[in-house]
Each structure stands twice: as structure tokens, then as C-alpha cells.
Length: 171
Length: 429
Image 1 (cartoon, rainbow over the protein chains, first blue to last red):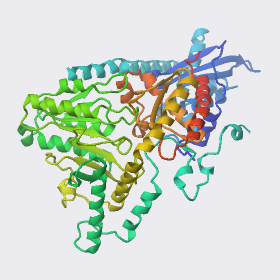
Image 2: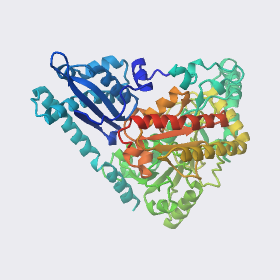
Image 3: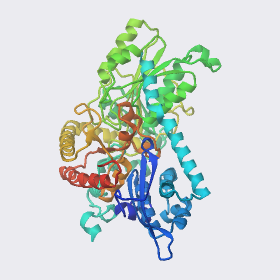
Image 4: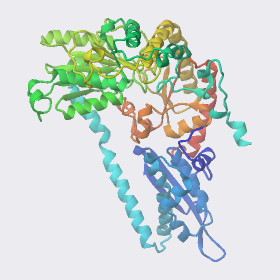
């Protein structure tokens, strides 16, 4: 038996839930970077419950990435379904890690992407509909944006640099 | 229901065949390039050296001499496989150790006098070492360490198939060059380098430069030893690394061939074992196993490499024709008979390997050592793949117990798995 990943991870990886792009979505969160090998797009559809509060009616995902990234995308779509936006915003990375069980240390960053994607999707919905965005969400959005830029910067001239160095030396 | 229909028995449920246990232990094992099961015949040869002939090779009594005899006999056998003299073979614990000894040992023995006293900060003050850009991590890291110690390192670029151009080697050699180290067959993409031509180029160029001391040529043959013919004399090799556990021997034994007359410093000092180049109590059982593994490989080499090349070509043809957006990495012809490496558009390699695992197929994304890092493989980047393409690689390597039906099974599973993962991927239209 493969013991690299927990049962929960393998359950979602074997049979991912809510796979695919949503045609008429209300919010879309795109996180990750191709250069480090994980991309996660999370779609949400927003509706109202009996009390008139806004809830996430449906969520779906498209993921390019490793086992954990895929399992976690699937997991988060099942968690948020039916939750109000406020409740969904409160889902933290720690909650996800707890649900996933044992995660290899070097894979933790892949498992955190889903939480980021969710808050980005909610941010997208709120800003598109010109609704009030909570301060916390704004901060999170800025942090994600910053990290994205950082990675892009780090990898931007990364490959050409290596090639250039090799070329120089052989000359 | 879903589980039963699509997934065949997972590893644990497949019972061992008591006679040849290596065959069926884990579904379909297609990761022979990372390690191989130990052959029954090898285990049998090793058995007496644990309890009966357990002596220390340095002891003077009968037990010691018995072990010593076994060690020397093994040395002769292994040397035989590559056309070397027995006195030119040094046993080590792993290919990583052999490669470290080759690079650091030569560099330390040949560093310029200014470095011998106090460490010089001047780059290149120690001498000049040439490696390729697709070496195994242990050579890459050893070279990096030498760079920090004041040696100048040239990393030769390779073409789209991963081949080093001997002409590039010629151009890179200069007066200060002390060592050239080129991997014989790459561990990820299986490309076999023109080692003979490179050796020739190095010999000629050092004649032209009229150097006082020779430029040594080291090759890491961990993947190719016992799989394709190697002759150190014909190939102009001064140092060569080979490993036991890649050729159905036990783990914990490897060798470094050091041509007689080569100046090299030991890394381990002590009792003076292995001609003073590697002090440590000798791991006799593993070395006896290594020698037996070499003997078997040599005997079966021609037949086995022919059989594996047919399987390899069948798999390559099958995958490329069955799956769109699949690319073969490495050279189509000049590659190890037991290695294939593909890239698939829109999907990531790690999830592919785990999907394979669920189907009872053991494969890998690249070298097993790099599975813990998140950066794409330096080998795939060096042959010109974009980082996102390098993330989607799959290496399948086969060996002694791979049958044609295993390849058929892969060809049946792979298109399904790729389709499934592409459905999840955001890039697939």
C-alpha cells in the first residue's frame, strides 16, 4: 500500500468531486503558477438561502498539479457547498490541513492553494457586483497578489540565465 | 463497484510467487532505473558471507583471509566486465560516493599550489573541471562544492536529445583543465553519450596543448553498467562509476574504476583499505553480490538488451500513436534499452505517477532523488523543455522481469489516466 498520502487525500484524488469549468459563474479564483507546477481555478455560483443570506450554491474546479493540489481542490468544493459567504471566508488553511490528514512536509504549499483560490473567488464575486469587501479579505487578496508577483519575478529570467551561463562557459 | 471494475488488485493484494518472488511482488514495476530487485542467484551467492565467512578482510586469521579472498575474486570479476585490471577497481558504498571520490579526489590531488596552502578566493585558482549540464545530482552538487572551493566549473550544454557534442568538449578544454566528467547514460532520459569520441577528443587536445599532467576523464555509468557494453580502454576512460543496486545486486555496493597511474586523493582516511583510497571495513557480502550481479549481467547482456529494446520501441510507438500531446524526451535511438521518458501536455507528472500507482504500476517522474523538490528537472530544462513541460514528465524503466504483457497493460492504462487528468486540467480546451 502506498502510505505517502492519507486516506482522505486518496479518496478525493481517486474520484475528484465537482470537476470542470463552470459556464455561468459568479466568482472565479485563479491561483498558482505554472512554473512551480500548480495551477488552480475555482469557480463559485452564488445564491440565496431561506434567510435571504448569500450562499455558495455550487463550486467547481480545474486543477493542473500534483495529487494534493487535485485532492484539495475537490475537498474544498465539497466543503463550501451550501455555506454562506461569511462562513466560507472563515475557512482557513489549518482547517483544510486538518481535514486532509498527513501531508508530506514539502507538499504543504500545494495543499494551501485551495484556501487562497476560495478567497480569491469570493473577492472576485464581491468586487464584480460592487459589494462591500471585508477588510480581512482585501488583505488576503493583496497578499496573494504579492506572492504571485514574487514567484513570477523569481522565475522570470531564471531559465535564460542558466542557458546563458552554460553558453558563456562553453565559449 | 467503481473500485472493483477499474482498478486491479493493489500491491498488497498480489501474493508473492514463492519461487521467483521478484517477479510479482508489486503489480507492474517499471522503475528499474531507480533501483532493481536483487536477483535470487545474487542472494544465494551472498548468503555464506553473513554467518560463515563473516571475517574482516584486514584480519590475518583464516576468517579474515577467507573474506579477503572473496573480495579479491569479486574485484577481478567486476574488472573483467569492463576490460580493466583488478587493481584498478575500488569498491565504495554507493554511486554517489564514487562520483564524489572521483570529482573531489581528482580535484584535491591536482589543485594548484596556491590553493594547497591557503584557500584562494580567486575563481578558477584551483583548476578547471568540465561537466555536462545533465549530470546526476551527486556530480552536480560535488561540482558546485568545488566551485565554492575555488575551482572553475564549466557546464556543457546539450542538444535537444541530451547529447553532448564532443566538439564542445574540445573547445572547453584549456590549459588549467584537470578533469572532464560526463554521464554515460542519463538517469532520466536515458540518452547515451558518445563517450568514446569524447575520450578521444580529450586525449588529442591534451596532446596539442602539450600538458605536463593528463586531463582525466570520468564517466558516471551507474545506469549503463551491465546494460550496454563498456570497455574502459577502448573508450579512453580514466575513471568510471558503477552501482550494484541498479543491476540486480544488493544496495550498499558500488565501484570506482581508477586507471593505474591516476593521481587521486582519498576522502575517507583510516586503515588504508582499497589501496588506501577508501578506508572502511569492507562490506564483503554486498560486494560478493555485486560481483555475482555483474557476472549474470555480462552473460545475459546481449540477449537482454535486445529484448528490452524491442519492448522499449513498442512502448514508445504505442504511446505516441495512442495519446495526443505526448512527447518523447531524449534520443529516439541512442538511448538505454530499458528507458522511456515522456512529457504529456496539460498534466503534471506527480499526479500521473500516483494515478499509475493506483493501477498497480510503479513509475516515476524523473530521478527518485528529485521527487522531494518542487523544481522541475534540470535535465529536462537543459534539453530545452519549458518549466511547465518539464513538470509533466513520466519515466518508465524496465528490466529483467518486465514482460510484454506489462507493456500492453501500460498502453491500456496510460490513455485512460491521461484522459482523466486532462479533464481536471484548466488548460485542456
